[in-house]
Structures are given as structure tokens and as C-alpha cells.
Amino acid sequence: MVKRADGVSRRSNSANPLGPGAGLDSETTAAIQALYRAAARPAYVRVPSMLDPGVDAGLEHAGWSFEGESLTLIGPLDGPGPSDADLASSPTAEWLTASHAINGRAPDLAIAFEAVLRRITAPAAFSAVRQEGRIVALGYGAVHNGWLCVEAVGTDRDWRGQGLGGQTVSALMEWAAGQGATGACLQTQSENRPAQAMYARLGISRELYRYHYRRGP
Image (cartoon, rainbow, N blue to C red):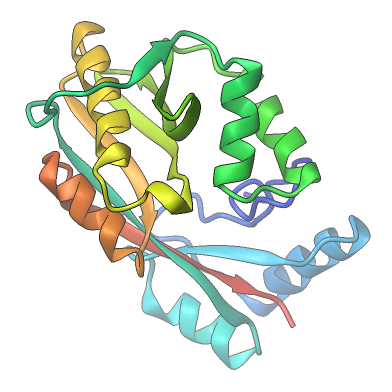
């Protein structure tokens, strides 16, 4: 499945396998490149860990470079601690501005991010922790089929290491439990050890799978 959307997110602009048994031959690879070339975009293939290793090896042999490995983590909703985070059912202008700044989004990606939020139809909550009168940590989550999906968690660089990111997620977990959810899932970069440690303290530590991208030459 070839995905194409506004913005620069690889998740929304990449070719994705339809299942763990999917293959990728040279003809299909060339077609993927042609589609993204026509759209003036770099060609990306998302490679989950459950795929046949031959798919990734073939892309590497063809000159596709390795980028951006992420982990998908899951856990029960029984680990949240106390939180001073505020919750809202929709993102405020202040929340959006802080999220763009904390997560370092370029203007085109900020526009695409806000468009994604507008399309959410599941119950959602937007969490924020304030210090010195401004938002310094935030994130959001949505509940579907008994699962809380946590997204866009970030903490201002000057306030990291103080547990504020954990507070934002704790508040989302408590809210989701009230919505009938029993588990949480999220994605984080494989090299982001501090984030993984934070999620582990909240009980979100089981690795479901990982994936990376291959970028076409």
C-alpha cells in the first residue's frame, strides 16, 4: 500500500506491506519510486520487523538507505501515578503552538499535524503540564477498541529529566481507563532510551514490534 499525504511525515508518505508475508520485487520497487518521483517526493518503504528479512536485504542491495527505527510498545493501564497535567478534549491554540515548538515541526509539517488532529473521530484527550506559566510538556491520546494510543509526547528541552513527560502520559492513562480502555500503545525511536525508561516506569514496556524505513536512491 502506497501512502501519500501533505506534510513530510514518513509514516504518511511511504509504501507499506499489507501483511507479514508481503514480498517486494524489483518491478514493484521501481513502481514505488516512479510514484513518489511524480509527486516530487523521496521514495520510502516502511519495513516492519515481522517481514521476511529478504525484503530488507533486497532494498539494501539496491541502494536504499536505512532511516528511522521505531519501537511499538504496549502495556496495561495500571501504572499511572499522580499527575499535575491538565486535560482537554480538543487542542487549544496554546497547545498546538507549544507542541510544534517542543517537537521541532517545520511549518509544512505543523499544518499536516493539525490536519491529522482534525480528522480524529475517536474519543481523544490532550494533556499539558505547565511550569512558570507556560506549557513545557504535552501529548495526546485517543481510545479505540479498548486501547489508548499515545502520540506526540514531548518535553521542553529546559525541563527534561524532571518527570513531566511521565505526568502527561499518566493523565492520559487515567483518562483512558475512565473511557473503558485496558491497555496503552505508543511508538518511540529505538535510540531514545530516556523515553523508553519513562514509559517502562508507567508499565508500557512490552515490545510488540519494531520498524524502520528504507529511502530510495
